[in-house]
Amino acid sequence: MELFHDPKIDWLGKKWYFLGFSLIFSVAGLLSILFWHHLPLDVDFRGGTVVRVKFAAHPDADRIRAAIDKAGLRDARIQQPYGPAANNEVLITLSLSETSQSALDQGRVTIISALTQNYSGDAAPNQGKLDLDNVGAVALTSWLEQNDPEHLGNTPEAETRYQNQASAVLNYRDAQHSGIIDSMNDLRGVVDPAILNALEQNAWLSGFHFQGGEIVGAQVGKVLQHQAELATLYSLGGMLVYLWFRFELIYGVAAVVACFHDTIITVGAFSLANREISLTVIAAILTLIGYSMNDTIVVFDRIRENLRLSRREPLADLVNRSINQTLSRTVLTSGLTFLTVLSLFLFGGEVLRGFSFALVIGILIGTYSSIAVAAPMLVAYQDWRARRGRTASLPAAKKARV
Figure 1 (cartoon, rainbow, N blue to C red):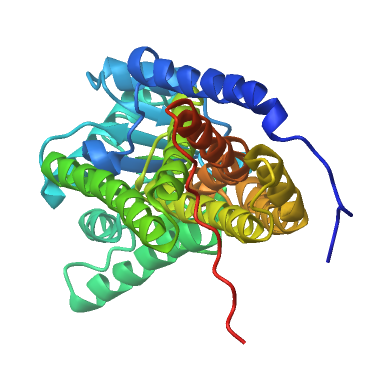
Figure 2: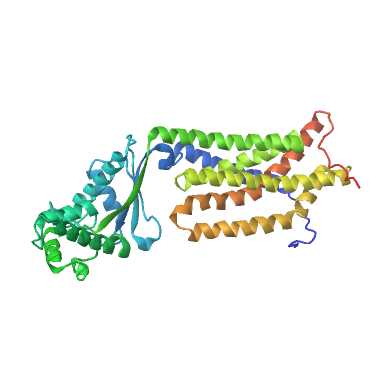
């Protein structure tokens, strides 16, 4: 399929515009990394505890931050909204140095305590009461056994009975209402009247629910960060060696410079947008490096083929013609891939947001760099050799054997 019939665009004639564009975005990203947002690393790399909290109503980020600060958690990060806005979920990150499961439990208890005391409006008159939005199965069963609202006594039947009633409450809360009970009246028909009466008198609804969390130790985060850097460098080095072997060193250098250019702009975009870089983002960056390299190789291969057919043609004209000949293929492949990752970015949810954002930026910049960065470097290399009194030695493709 051919979208453009014999285009004659002078790409090399616009190289200074391309250079200006690349410098603006590269410098802006580097300035943001060095002086503004720096590198906003996810908990995967810096270590800490992440908890996900769901609210009954639309959460107020300023009130949450004030409640967390009042509890003494000065370095907490709040991401709101997390997922679709209708879910009323917030992601809270704590910087904790401990790496045991107890650290996660402590982080959960600390956040629930801070929100209970400083966020929920009815916290003061409900001190000491059971928080039905955050209680677990063991604690609720134990509470029912101690209060014994059905007067069953200390019998095995009572233990089984209260376990079943506690399971009914938590199943209604978690499975049917995503962790939030809107009103005690909602439990009518779910538990026996005597148990409901005890809950109405001695329990309350805080209006938020701890959905889950995870912990990454600081040492583990440093190891993951080091491995991510090595993976990126190894991928660039491996591609340089391949292109050196497959074409010539200048082709490999040009392609690696283009990929490095793509990586700088993509990472800079994360810093400018203050989006955290996680392991999935590193996977996306490695993906776009391979994608950009593949697109560059297609252009280089056409340049090498045309060198065999038109040795006397000026290299700038030959490069322009080669880019124009592959333009339909570039637009089709890059355009369709871009639409796919754009759909992931718009509709894939918060879990895929960082990954898809990196690919959206990377595919645009990767396609651009194959035309505006890698190819002009070949011409610049020839001009440099000519000024030194040498003949340019870009290898042409070999004739096919019949």
